[in-house]
Length: 263
Image 1 (cartoon, rainbow, N blue to C red):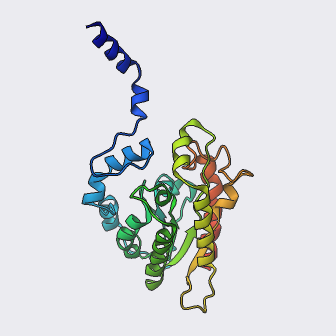
Image 2: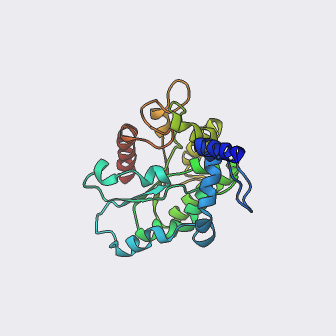
Image 3: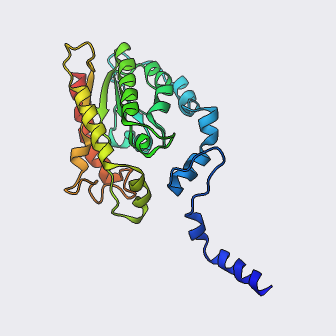
């Protein structure tokens, strides 16, 4: 009896240590990161029932009227970094629509691009995506797979006369305890490589039939990175998502890119 009590006491005394261990979910290979494994396990219903999460904005889209004459409608399209951005506070009086969904990767965004962007008839779509692809939120992805999705989104927009602003993938940091997991899941080298690809894609000659016409590159990265190649300390509490200070840096950059494209 004494031995059983001792074991029970040990288990009750160390719940945090147990919580940090990755518990494999049948049928889902481990990523090697406990937090990411837990996230993927909790998203099984989404991945199987509504991969693109079309239900998230379906009702809001149905209630949205077509753009008024001379309305400069812009859709901010992306993952949680967009989702948590209070556009009404940072861009008061602007016809900016938030269509971010936390945790999403570019394959999921492709699924909902028609519903959440094309059908809303914006003049511009500002896309911020890719960090969750690097992390493997919906499974392992090669850089060329992410780049193909980037190109597909831009091509769909171009067919519908929607200008694209492609934002760079944001830098990350590990300066806080809560940033450790996100930092470990995201390769800084891959972030740099994706940003180089995006910048090049958006700068291709318009005379080239393969060109990314109507595509502009928005460089958040350079304004938010420190001399170590990480996100500046103080711009994000968890190393990934901008806080108020981070969005304060991003807002004028986004506004300038939008105003330039509207000319």
